[in-house]
Amino acid sequence: MTILITGASTGIGVSFAEEYAKRKHNLVLVARSEDKLQALAKRLSDAHGIVAQVFAQDLSKPNGAEKVVRFCDEKNLEIDLLVNNAGFGMLGEFLSHDVARLEEMVTLNALTLMKLSRLFATKFAERKSGGIINVASTAAFQPVPNMAVYAATKAFVLSFSEAIAFELKDKGIRVMALCPGGTDTPFFDNAQYERSKLMIPLEKPEDVVKTCIEGYERGETVVVSGAMNKLMVNSSRFVPRSLVTAIAGSIFKK
Ligand SMILES: NC(=O)c1ccc[n+]([C@@H]2O[C@H](COP(=O)([O-])OP(=O)(O)OC[C@H]3O[C@@H](n4cnc5c(N)ncnc54)[C@H](OP(=O)(O)O)[C@@H]3O)[C@@H](O)[C@H]2O)c1
Image (cartoon, rainbow, N blue to C red):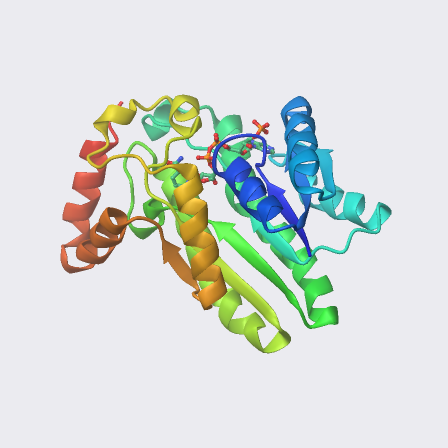
């Protein structure tokens, strides 16, 4: 089996690569940091005897998805599972953010994820087999003031994944959305968010990935990682949306 993982250079993406390499799956690792991807590919091939390919690509550019597919076609790589994990967030008031940077976020977190899903699902449908794991977030379940665009991209990922999971199941394609809560990766430094402001302890990326793979293997469509995160997501359904929004805004303050 060959698994393509986007955002494989740090954080949750590295844990996906490690966990699937342990299970003896071949890998295609995608992100911008070629040096980190090459080092990871070498470490995992040496340790587990797998083949790990690297494709360095900026997926916040509109044609990033097509380039990934072209790379796989040129190398005759048949992908069995696509893990759309690359993404970033930015803390701060909507009006303070640079428009071009917001556009990159929407392109990376939502547009490229949708295009990769569409392009690989066509190949999966022809073979009547394949899978897609899309990394959303617990931020998908409510609006988040001061992270408005990020949370909206994750709401897109969740809704989109549930809908295509329903459409594609009869074509032999499994689709799942993973919704991690706060996880101990460089995400928070990149987002300029002080981790200690989160009300619950951060999960380890390797635990998030184990929960994800177990859920995928059980046939789940949506997996929220971590007991506290599940509790928060479920309890927020019974609270007025305006109050949930206000609480999220107080947690995600600059
Ligand atoms: N950490 C959390 O608390 C948390 C919670 C919920 C959901 N998530 C989601 O989990 C996913 C992984 O995040 P993480 O926590 O592991 O954060 P991370 O350590 O910052 O990893 C983000 C990954 O995305 C890649 N990436 C960023 N911009 C890119 C671009 N323009 N083109 C290609 N790749 C790009 C990065 O690689 P390069 O910089 O090398 O390109 C890196 O491999 C994201 O979708 C994030 O939204 C994280």
